[in-house]
Amino acid sequence: ALWRGIREKCLVLLGSATPSVETMYHAKTGTYRLYSLKNRYNGRPLPAVQIVDMRNELQQGNDLSISYHLQDAIGQTMEEGKQTILFLNRRGNSRALVCVDCRSIPACPRCSARLTYHSANERLMCHYCGYSHRANQRCDDCGGPLKQLGTGTQKVQQELQSLFPGRQILRMDADTVSAVNTHEKILEQFHQEKIPVLLGTQMVAKGLNLPDVTLVGVLDLGLYNDSFRAAETTFNMLTQVVGRAGRGDTAGRAVIQTMTPEHRVITLAAQQDYDGFYDMEIGLRQVQ
Image (tube, rainbow, N blue to C red; front, side, top):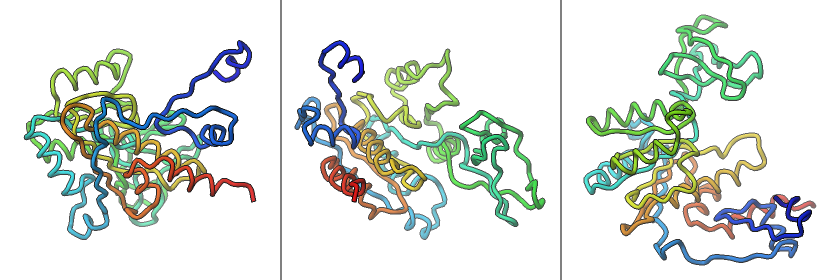
């Protein structure tokens, strides 16, 4: 878009609630011109955000993916006749299988990434290259028992169905979206049929304007990976998904679950403080 704008000598407009750090740097240094919208769409207040420490949940004996506080909030939202969006940026049943004895984790033989367990077809799949094979009961290396590690959208859907029997739970991820069952059809079903809960990956994080959604829950974060953009990606995703709540006449709220509630990226996202995040992040990226 920038190249075409230069070539055609026309204006290029970049619009986002969470501009990239590079784009904001160009705007603040005068390469781009900066315009800011200070008020939310329709003048609605931002959702109230609560951060839940999942370490406390483990101490209280809750080994589910959904905290007690979020369980109560979902139930209350259902009773009010409103809707909930739950965000988990990991599809499948579990992040991986790990051997209890030798602690090895099955990896993709083609690209060495960890394989993700899918309970629907009992297979281990690589989300990078598409390789898959049937999940074994025992470890290939030592024969020890395999234990599920982490969580994914399939597993959370199963937990929700157990917690709220008789309530419909809609899931939107790469395993449920297809050429026939498009994400537009899933969103239309969620809206038209007033389905209580929509659980999904990053497909549910941006651009949705659903007035009956008053609760957003963030189940897991990706702060710790090997990309220097990890903090930026997490902040942007949190800010965008929290903004899905309270876009109608009823005030919204959001619950962010994390093992690191004091992390600066999480607290800034909860406050919707983009300027604070930019100042923190640009300081880390400055050339010394």
